[in-house]
Amino acid sequence: MVDRRQVMGFRVRAQQLDRAGGTVAETAVLDLGAQHTGPDGGRWALALRGVDASASAGDDLVLLWTVRGAPHLYRRADVGRVAAAVEPFSDADAAKRIYDAAKPLKAAGIGILAALDEVAARMRTIVTEPTVKGDVSGRLADALPEPYLRFCRPCGVTHLYEMPFRLAAVRAGLELTPDTSPPVLRRIPAFRRAASPGERLDLVRAYLRLLGPATPKLVADYLDAPVKDVRARWPQDAVEVTVDGETRWLLAADEAALASAGSTPTRLLGPFDLFLQAKDRATLAPDPARARELWPVLGRPGAVLADGDLVGTWRPRKSGTKLTVTVQPWQKLTAAHRRAVVEQAERLAAHRSATLAGVEFAD
Image (tube, rainbow, N blue to C red; front, top):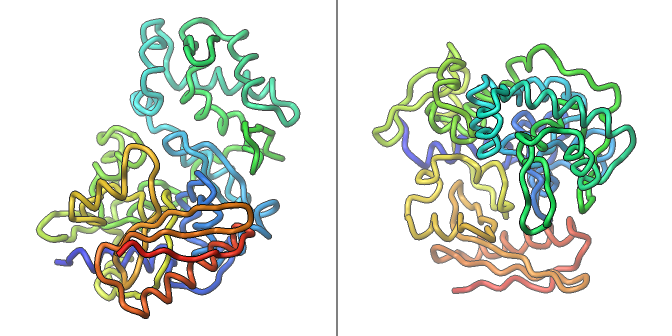
């Protein structure tokens, strides 16, 4: 039996938030992908784990649309196995992942995996050189029949549905060019999808290793996949543990680490940091009011991690080359905690090529 604090400490250590330095090859969160959304996205997540992402981004990292259609950073050396890992488990899984785009395809008798393959094949033909997303979408709309398309009221034109577009990109061997808006797609050099992801990149195992202990439903919610498909792929070496009275599972190899977990780093976690992506939100923030503050419908803040727990939220405000960080504590912060938060804010400012103008604590 373990409690919430042990789970939090286990995840801090498993996700290497307690280390001072490391390499892309050694960074565990890249097994599941570091979501690269917003200015404090994947690269900041890597920086928090001691990786100089700015220096390695061009050669060692690749940016792909994968889980939940979001852009994630991975090791470039893993790209073929990543493509195998993020492949939908079944046609039903693929339908769930593409949301409302599945209905017209089903009505037309088109299998969802077959539809993704069709979109991918056409994307591959279109993107022979770096191409802006809108141009790719326009050419797909001209080439594909009605079940693949929808009328976009804001744009006033007909597009391919968004999720099939995003999920087909990896199948087509396409990556996102970093720091482009609108996104620019380009071919992945020498791309070949692997036959299987292997144990390290298997998404179910990676979730348990980095965000465990967990249940099949928590993993399914993270992937937007049916629980049935996740259960069918549940690791044989997963063992039961009881977390505050609830039965969950963990990889057997991690049992000792869970029992001994304990860590005290202070970190400014980005809004989409993997630590905050766990689907057992009540474990991360047991107070419903705090949970609503941390995960609003729009405009997520970052989270302050200290002593192995979440102790507040933070938001950045940049003006020119000056960065101000506003912190909303959830409890009284000690002088040592405040100094650590300021040090992390200075680190964030440097990461953003800015100067820290100050840290405002909303006491």
